[in-house]
Image (cartoon, rainbow, N blue to C red; front, side):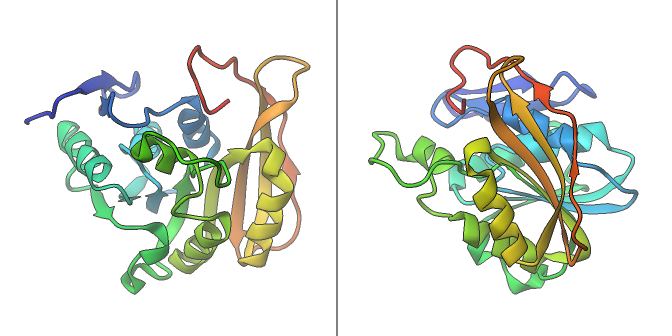
Length: 234
């Protein structure tokens, strides 16, 4: 398998799996791993990873639940990141389980309507802001090409009734996240906040919602996750 300049295969440290990363693009952070651990899995899961990047959330979730995930579809807007996802899938010999779709989340084909039992998403967290000198990395951090409203609408459209949508987002936007999920027909059912250290304000919210679910939220004990040096998502 031919790697482009700057691409390296890194260990996922679970199940012997690897993932391609590149210095030219936004590298995944611990948020992705926290999300894949937070999301619950059911037998025969037909799952998707929105805003997949190089595929970290979908691959890590599969590594945790390989015997229960029937299919995993990765949706990524940036062509080069989608290509990296395909190569990561091939690197792990998962072509029969995984597929990669190169498109914007809001442009996902109607063929996927009501398809998935679970959707995972580590989306762009930041609203607008000044233009970045690195557009590829900015697209992974800022809502330049996908708003929270568009994301929730797409998840609701692609989930089957009773399907779950698990995402992570900035803790200081939690009220907006909850309202937007509810407005899209996705009832928040589980919440877990993450702080960098004991006593510190949470920086991350992990939320699971259910399409057509009844009202009632379970708040899990908060997590501590010391941010590694250089982790800009903090």
